[in-house]
Image (cartoon, one colour):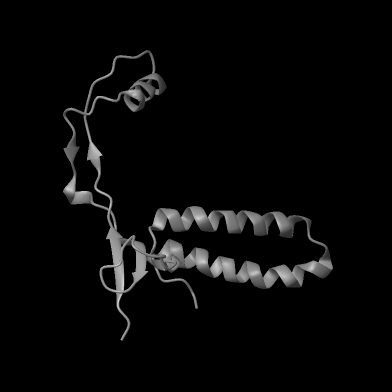
Length: 129
């Protein structure tokens, strides 16, 4: 039976609370984002993110010692799945908005597949087969 080395990750929010004097909310937000002093940071274990797969290698204890195996989309971080699929959906919308009637059938099947995957991502489910 094959053995795989799987690397999983979760994101741990780190936050700080600090006061900023500014003429507007937008300026205060800019000051906060540009502030690089994190001496009083706090880690928020209560709202740690989902666990997702960041690397796969064939063999025992083989992380980073050989070629990696592609991670199936539905085991990747949801925000990255959204970003990757957004590009697919945008491309389909562009094509369909300018497609000739004779091309629509060709692209419609791809659009249906892309919609099913987008719905799975939104539902937190596996990709459709």
